[in-house]
Length: 187
Image (cartoon, rainbow, N blue to C red; front, side, top):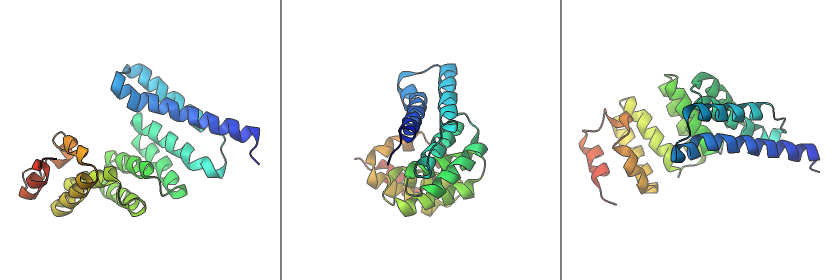
């Protein structure tokens, strides 16, 4: 039986997630001021932190906290929460994307690559995971593997081609003939 307290707790967690979305995707579209964006993310973080949840929803709480810390550029702390969220809910690709992103910014590129690869184990057709893996492999100088992952990503979601030109992670492999061939293909 779902108690009233559990319902309130879930509602509060959804509210924290809403604040995080407001400070990220919505802020990008409508240009939320930096100070207001930061306060909104901090509010999401505090709401999630203070929200008691059952084990079934603990991963969501950890994801919101990790994502909030990632947006606040506290990458090490974010990776701790995101790693725990991934342990509890390994099939959610957003966790693996955020974890890889945070680890990469901590300078732990090998671990970022491993995290994104684990995410692909659970969701092999996730274009964002393939794209990020291609980025990390390119940074590591693993050109053939990076190109293969990029090809997978573009095959799944051709619109990602728009991001290739402005992605600095590909600078190291941009002149490779295979890279040029797959990024020049018209959709």
